[in-house]
Image (tube, rainbow, N blue to C red; front, side):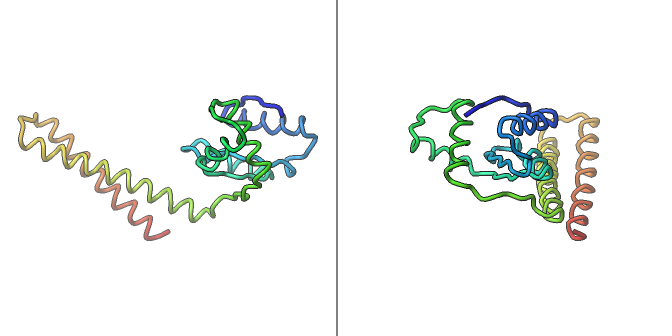
Length: 165
């Protein structure tokens, strides 16, 4: 088993493919990459690998965490974690991943954005309410009101986009 660290950027991804091909003597279409779904770190990498023709599995980190003690690994660091993940991928044959259709990814992005803008709008409305109980300079009030108007317009645009998706 070999290991190497690569950056999670396009240059690192290309280097990983080259390194993997060199060490396995396989083409990209014969490579299988297994990664954990941790935060957003896999969200650009997995589709890129898939587009290169590689097989990709994106696994739940809890599965790998619970797998580790079963193979005698009690501690976790990056190097041990990569070994556990590689063994998990080899022994458990996780399901292959493929990107969701563009329509689904678009819908998800619109919903996430709408949720964020609505939270911002709630915060600004709370600030406006708070300003009625304190001495708030008119410039601050004007700023809050402009921000609320802007956020309301964004909510409307996003809801329209969702209806049209």
